[in-house]
Image 1 (cartoon, rainbow, N blue to C red):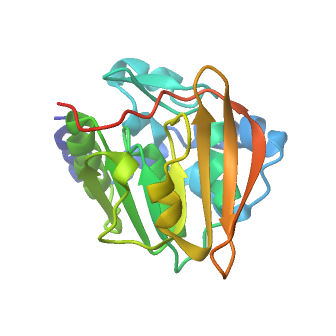
Image 2 (image 1 turned 180 degrees about the vertical axis):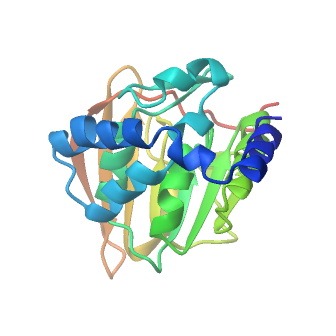
Image 3 (image 1 turned 120 degrees about the horizontal axis):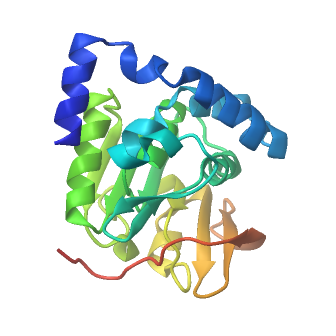
Length: 229
């Protein structure tokens, strides 16, 4: 339904979705992202251009450009803008990269990644969210994003290996299946842990050897195993 409303709005005023909140997006990037050390110009540009207000419930729209996570239903959240920008910068994406995202949510992180890479594959375990995100991303013209409803613990073996993998929900431990689906020379960025979570960066060298490092403490929703309706 939300995607239909957005489609009608775009048809009547194609610039509306992008321009209504342009000043708020610019302020968000300036005060909450650049000021905290994010330097990648490609990331800063896409954060200024991606309409976060379309990826939150209508009741949350006025808070869309605050630097905070927001509820999107089904006990899920959209990550705070700084975390989205920071994780995107850590990924170090290139224009020819194929990226796997675990935890589509409302589709915001996929929308941020789409202009930076060749292809985004994203998996969501909550079927209504997967459907809504797929419809919205299509409406917004992100034709290089493919959404799947399913268990993120299994990854997407048919499309592996991936240059980059990002998780937007926290497993107790990063699944080995995802590490296995990372291409040599690739990178994975993910929150990991239960009560205490840390953002983990995994680099796989050309020989397939893996190196882990901890970035900083975070708090994400848990990564759920197995499909659910």
